[in-house]
Length: 259
Ligand SMILES: [Mg+2]
Image 1 (spheres, helix red, strand yellow):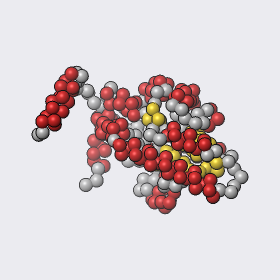
Image 2 (cartoon, rainbow, N blue to C red):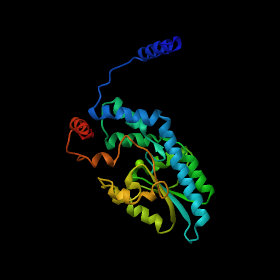
Image 3 (cartoon, rainbow, N blue to C red):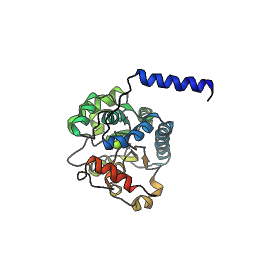
Image 4 (cartoon, rainbow, N blue to C red):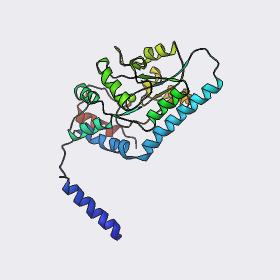
């Protein structure tokens, strides 16, 4: 080991000890979440994927502006959580407190209204605005959290962060009707999200990805997919949501891994 590396290793050890390294009793699911959150918060690959996604969306806007001759004004539809706002500190909370998701703790986080934007998100909404393209935020956050969500978006400087451009969860998490509401008045250039339900409901239960592969040309053009390895409907495609205990889920996930 070179001298600098030794000093670094020693410094790291002292740092860990000095910050009072404590053994956190991990919830079995939270335990499995650690690498996902670590990647999401610390990898440049994740940052680059967001920038890449928003660049594709800008390109879609430019292409549409050059070729579109319809009468409807243009819009883009974006999801909020893990698309334009980064809620990974909430996942950190779950890990460090040995908990799994509850609406109670999630609402508390949402009401703090301090989520940071994902890389390139604010700039993208401003780019759309400059080009005369409206941005609609379609989220499955609940109606009671509308004001907190708006404050968070406004404080971060997002364009179109107003109630007219924010469509919260209705009596269903299915976003189809809300998309249709926008589509009735606007030509939608592209859809940006971290969950297949942000694009088309049909993909949500597409267990073997057959429908996805039928639409290969749509991804990166009409549908821009952002990375979220922390949570999503993809988990519940593999086992029922409310039947297994956290410990059983954690074990079952390992069983599902392919050799
Ligand atoms: Mg999302």
